[in-house]
Image (cartoon, helix red, strand yellow):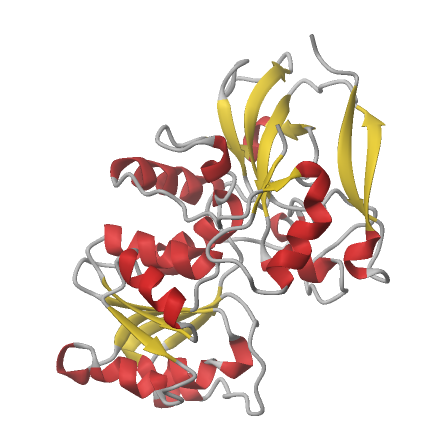
Length: 345
């Protein structure tokens, strides 16, 4: 029997931070002709979700909004004209619901779940049939709930502009969701991976995941040059998954190979000096902003995850739906390794 209401978290604005998260119960609307009703089993958090509540997110928002972009669930009802899905199908959410294929454009960039559109921190969600991708057969709901943002962003970084080749070198920064997925996807492709961290404990975990080299960036302030020295002939790395922003971009430029690609994804780190775009000329490299990816890209990624049997890294602390505020604080305090997951059902 189709439920008549759903519990969901809401963010009303940016003036209260995490205290602005509110758990409410609302009616479930009628499913439209090209829509599906999904029972959500799990959602996962991204840095984006945290800064939306603090007014620091630079992309389109609409308040009040159900937070979070990443979710995994099961189809429980389909509209009369739906052709892609049937009841019982396991699905994961697409970050930008309007980004189906090709480059992102202004319209599709304004269709992000948990920002411009209601997201996944709810028990049931009505979504357009094109806003979903099948769940990889080898993943549980908890594991699959991590794919929509961090995994797809890493896939785009490695394959969206200049596709990664076996034997090339990838530099990833830290142990957050994007970086860990980047490590896993790069190793599955036969690449050499250099990772950075500030923690001895996380250094061992990164090595267990397959990192060929790990540099402690607190002990080695010139880690960009050190990374370059680790590459064949000291030529530099082919891809950098850049999540630090101002605080790390200078070192990424020191590490990059001629004609290499720096994919700029985040701005987690602080810093005093910011490199200029002209340094892409002096280093003969490409720096590109990455805004997640399309449904077509996500379908390719799902196929790769199945073929290589990649298992997303989930933090040991999995939070109950009612403990969502605690999950936000836990991630903000940087206590996590990999993805912070919230179990909904």
